Image 1 (cartoon, rainbow, N blue to C red):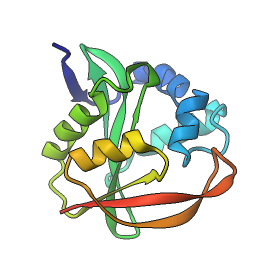
Image 2: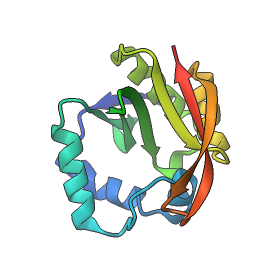
Image 3: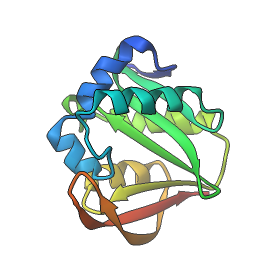
Image 4: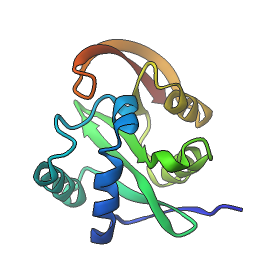
Length: 157
């Protein structure tokens, strides 16, 4: 059986995370990404901010002890939202769902919001299985696609 766990993000995770966040298919699916996923300096600055901010909870996701992504919560416009990034090599194996369940056990804030590109059916399924319900959609600019796309907004009470 596969063991999924959460832990603090370590410096040794950053190279793998940078590579994950540059994978073209992952970037397209996530849609709302850095303007230039290949900009290592911007990535390092962003990660430094995430790792030191008091209103952000950031965790590494591991599978059998190996780093496979991140999950975090942050406050935007007064609402707490969650986001995750899972290495494409383990998509479809239940890793994101298991990590989300573990993360929700540690984040007591409710309601909790999540957003996903409306065509990212995998992420929408993961969120709905965890109890999130669709509360709306909006058109937003997705830098990874250089276009306005539909974004689904979900809420967990």
